[in-house]
Image (cartoon, rainbow over all chains, first blue to last red; front, side, top):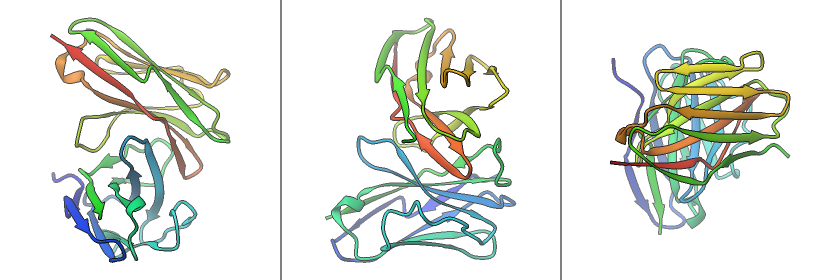
Length: 115
Length: 110
């Protein structure tokens, strides 16, 4: 079946603009995760959803970042008033459940460039 | 502070050779440790997931070990192939948070 898909694959925006990144998880996966990978740096965990609920939003870098998930499927990560330091690859992953040993399947990522 | 360190930062080996990558962590409380393979420009792919009670887990030519007492893990790759060229990332899960290591960049040469 289809894997995790993300759109757009690349996004170039101007500083101060808002952007919306989309993630389509594997069908039937109740858990969804967002990560960020900045150039030359490791991956950083941002937020996870169990169903439509995000129990802990403390991993989001600032209040300019928000995420939502509707219908237990598609999720969007929104960055308001983008800054140059927001430039990174944003990765989404999904798993069957939120479990300590559940395999996460990653999408290809969205490369965000803020000019 | 919760941290994950990996060594070496990069490694070059010849095709067919074995290699071992290291991961040390200070994350607490510990839920599980994961190894991922990430090809350039792609999302990470899960190799192994180990809980506190597991010492060894294999996935084909990949074998991960975990010593929860010393908070160390290793990933051993046997009979390397050109397609093994990638970044290998160690991740420690605590609760519903994840701490990622910086990765080891492996290059396998013919």
